[in-house]
Image (cartoon, rainbow, N blue to C red):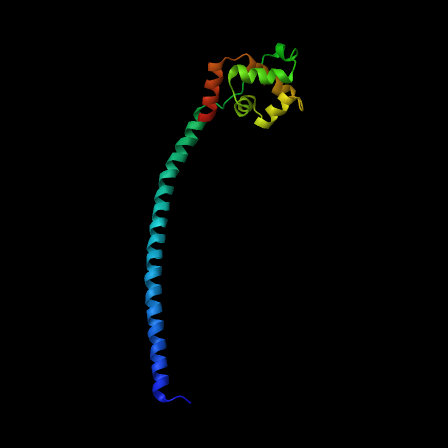
Length: 151
C-alpha cells in the first residue's frame, strides 16, 4: 500500500493536469468556433447575394433567343459531299482549333479529329451544319464563337 501522502499528491497532480488540458482544449476550440461562425455568416451573405443574381439571369435567358446553330438551305443539303481533307482545310482557313470547330458544328473536338482522319463521317444534320460553317468568313465565325461563350 501507498502512504497516504503519495496517493494525495498523485490525485492532485492528476486533477491539475486534467484542468490544464481542459483549459488548453477550450482555448483551441474557441478559435475554431469563432472561425466556423464567421464562415457560416459569410456563406449566408453570399447566398443572399446569389439569389437575386440567379433570378436576373433567369429573366435575361427568357428574353434572349436560344443560340441557333447555323443551318444550310434545303436545296444544298442534297448535294453535300464530304472529304476528310476538307475539314482540315476549313479549320486552317478559318484559323480554328478542333474544339472551336466542334463548338460551331455541335460536336466534340475528338469528333473533328476523327472526321479529319477519315475514321468517321458526319451525320446528315452535322454535314449540313458544317456546310453552313463553310460559307462563313473568319469574322462571322469569331463573332459566333464569342456569342456562344457569352451564353
